[in-house]
Amino acid sequence: MDNNVAPAPSWGRRLAGIEGLRAAAALSVLAYHVGLMASDEVHAGPVGQVILPVMGQGLPLFFVLSGFLLFRPFASSLLRGSELPSFRRYARNRVLRIYPAYLLIFSVASLAMGCVYLVGSTHGFGPENVGRLTDPAKFVANALLVHMFIPQFVMSGLPVAWSLTAEITFYVAVPVMALLAAGLIRRGMPKATALAVPAAALIVIGLGVSLWGHLAADDLGYAQLIDFAFGQTWTAVLLRSFLGQADLFGYGMAAALIVVLLNERGVRRVGIPAKLFLVAGAAASLVAGASGTMPFLSNFAGVASALLLLAVVLPSSRNDGPNRLAAVLEWSPIRFVGLISYSIYLWHLPIIFWLMRRQLTVGSSALALPFNVVLVLGIVLPLSAVTYYAVERPAMRLKKRPAKRSDPAIEDRVPSAS
Image (cartoon, rainbow, N blue to C red):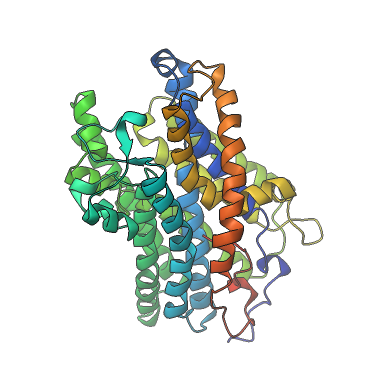
C-alpha cells in the first residue's frame, strides 16, 4: 500500500444513520401499500395522485442503499491498490442476508396464510388476487427468487419479491463490475474514472429502459398498461428486472465512490452548507419527479435518495462524530426499525391482505389512512422483531468476516447490511 496515502479518518469506521434510512424506506413502502386500500375517490384526488406515489419511493432508497453498501468495499480496495474482498465470502454473506427470512415469510404467507399473489389476467390490489400457491414449479421458482425471469410467474408469490430478484441480480453483477474496473485500471485508466464507469453504465441503462418503457406504453389503455408493466409479459420481466432498476443501483454506487474518494484523501469534515445543499437537492428531485413527470418519479427518487444518503454519511464537523441528520437517524427507536426493516418489508403486504380479507381495516377514506397505517404497524412491528431475532440475526452471525481489519473503510460493522 502506498505510504503516501492519508490515513483513513475515523468516520470511515462506521456509517451512522444507515439503519435510520432503512427505517424510512420500509415505513414509506408500508404506508404506500396501506394507502392502496383507499377508495377510488381518494385515488382520484391529490392524496392518490401525488402524496401516495411520493410516499411509495422507499424502494428506490433501498436499491440506492444496496448500490452504496455493496460497491463501497470493492471501490475502496481498488482505490487503495489492495486485494479485492473475497468473492466466495461475499456470495455466502449475500445468501445469508436474503434467503433465510425470505423463505420463512414466503412459506408462511403461501402455505399458512394464503396471502400471496396468484398469476391471473389482472393484478389489482386486494384479497381477490391472492391465495395459496399450489403449483410446485411456481412455488420452487418463488422460493429460489427466479420467478421474475419467467413471464407466466411474474408477480406471483410475495408481491414485493420482484425487487429481491432484481437485488440478487445486482449482487451477481457487483463482482463482475469490480473486475471490469480492475481491468480498466490495469490498462492505465485513472482509478476514480475506472470505478465511475460501471456506475455510469448502470445509470444509462436504467434511464434508457425507463424511457423505452414510457414511450412504448404511451398509447396503452389502463388494462393494457397493467399487463405491460406487471402482467405475464416479457416487457414486465424487463421493467421489473435489475436492468429496469439499474440507475437506482448506479446512483448508490456513485455515492459510494464519492465517499471512498473523500476517505482516501483524508477528508474529515464536510461543512453544513454542503449538507444542506444535498438535502435541498434531494427535495427538489422528488418535487421534480412528482410534478408532471410521474412516469419517471422513481428515477428522480433515486437521485434524491443518493443525495440524502450523502448528506447522512458525509463526515461531521463536530468531533468526527455523526452529523446532525445522522444523529437523528441514530435515535434508538428509529435505528431499531431499521434493523428489522427487511422483515417489515416482507411481512407488511401479507398482513395487509390478511386484514382486508377479514374486513378488519378501519375504512377506505383519506382520514382512515393514518389509522390503517397504525393498525398494520401494530401487527407488523412485533412480528418483524421476532423474525429478526429468531432468523435474521442468527443467519447474519454465520457471515464470514474478513481476516484482516487493517482497512476501516471496508469494514462491515452495520449489523443488517443490505
